[in-house]
Image (cartoon, rainbow, N blue to C red; front, side):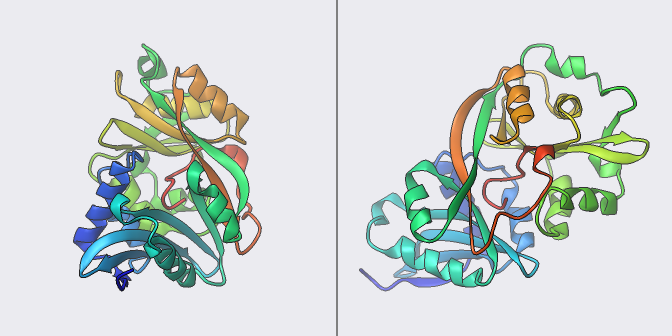
Length: 287
């Protein structure tokens, strides 16, 4: 095995990591890396052999107690030579003394268990075109007393505090970009001025993905999706399988399972969040 050099990704290499993820069939958003880098600029590592990138992995630190691991990719021709595990170890060192989460693809879950990760639940990606008339039926409204508005018009502090109910740490730099990136659409559901639902849609190479999708009820979640989706647009939604209402919602929309991964944690117990209100995770790469 040739010597492996590991260092933080450059701006160009962040785009390369996105392309590698697309090559793996993960369908990342077109502008994801702009927001991802803001979450932890030192958390995206690239492994190089003779100066050429051959592997990548991310370990994003949130606050002092939580971190999330993703983008664990070796180029196909370089696999089985020990480069991936060396990069994994570097990322784990970056996340030391934290509870660490990841969303592991099926064929890597045994390896993650060997590193101390324990299964919490699954994320199931449901994909397809919501049934005809769904978006029109949304009509920009929601359940009685609930008003839908452009998420960018809600005071950002209110959005960040709402997000904190569903995510184990503050992530304001990431969130500010996530709501405002070109092509991203956001919808907030308000009841008596309080947030009771929130969702973001972002374009991908194959259509669009919705995440996060938070809501106080399945009716509110459905209204938010209707406010986000364009008629005839292909969408994908990563639903925690522990949210039965979320599963029923995507089935009602006519979407079908297309991908599965396991949310796993190491270094501590699963963090407490309002799991019942999470109808779709934000991203499988950063949590």
